[in-house]
Length: 558
Image (cartoon, rainbow, N blue to C red; front, top):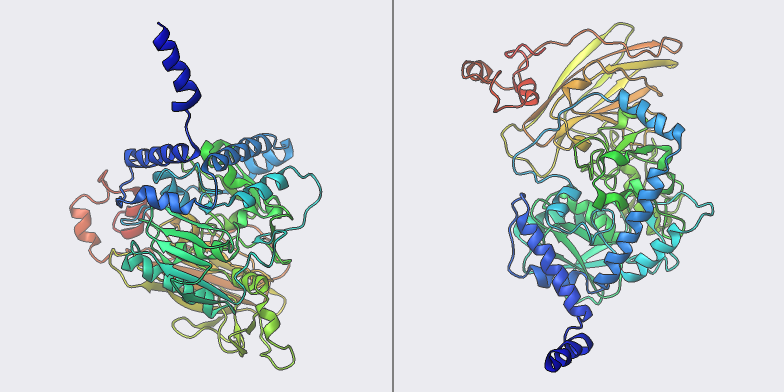
């Protein structure tokens, strides 16, 4: 008996103690095991554990897990304490939403949280795709305990700003794991941010502070510049321009739009639909951690998650208070206000002297790369943002009776393309008149990322317009707030076909959501008659959404 007691005491006091490194290794191994049990198929590099260890070398994983758990509990309590009037507002807005079936497209892995959940990373990533340092976690945790009034914020601007920016130049390099697809997506994002800001983004494997771009498991990045090498992963399902631009936005200093302090004025959060491990995704930032430079909330921001993000049942976790914006959230396109805010964050606008720089129209501003040219809101083009963008589309004048046009954009085929094809229309109305537009489209998904139509009826033309991409949106009527309505049709999968009906009306006409005369009923796919003979319209192998999308007329679904 005596030897057993000695062995137990020795084990307890010495041999059975677990070091922080062992705790980290054990947890990382459990992450990989959980990922491998997922029903989401991913490629698994042999050095996954080393990649994860390298990613989180700026923080203590035990501290990070504890901090994240604390934030989840805190936000669960706050969301559960929703006042009755806000709960009623959420209920009322949910009733306004048009029922839609989310489209599934082959070779599209899903949203960022879905990809990272499948990779088993949800315990370690803040708001679904951000890696925090210990100091950032501490600042955020402390800020959540503040009850004082805070300014409206979005870009990462803590007490160390501007040292958390990259200054004039950000550096990156590609890890050996980065595939051609990863490199192409990231370079496209680099090109966009570099061409539309004053930030030089240079490839350098030797810079002291640099971003390691690699193909890990999942999509994630650090926020702002941190000391030394910081990771940005574009794993399977993440190798697209929109995801790369989003993650590079984090690395340059952006948090998520839905975490802005003023978001409750624009969004309602439905706790009942949120997966428990993602509750902190709906955390709000404070004046200690970010700043929005006085810019309004933009539902079309590249940093805004989709309406069903982190949902366990595909029902909305976020409901836009302007419900026409419900499908705009989750965009894969960088918005004008995203670009404008990044230029403010890096002081790019100060590089163009007001007296000698371009006089930009319609809310545009001089491009720091060439102060004689302008960066323009969507729907506007030319050197001074005073003309319709070049390419397909036209300028139309609304009259007192209904008029219509039909647009078809896209390249066809079942391949998901990297970038959108688009056409730009301007619809003009006479002074003191309004405009009603009926939109017909399909293939619904958060952000309308496969194709759709954007209609800009707001007085602030810098804002992203309403986006639609579902046949459920047929009959929707909008009212213009200005004398010019830019309309953008776009697509990167199959085709997007849209019919719009419009007319100028008196400013004192009724604001009712009148259902307009039905547009021509037509099929999208030329082989629909053959499909019908093979049972397409009734086959359980095809969703109702697919039948309505491809063969509306042949399946009698008009």
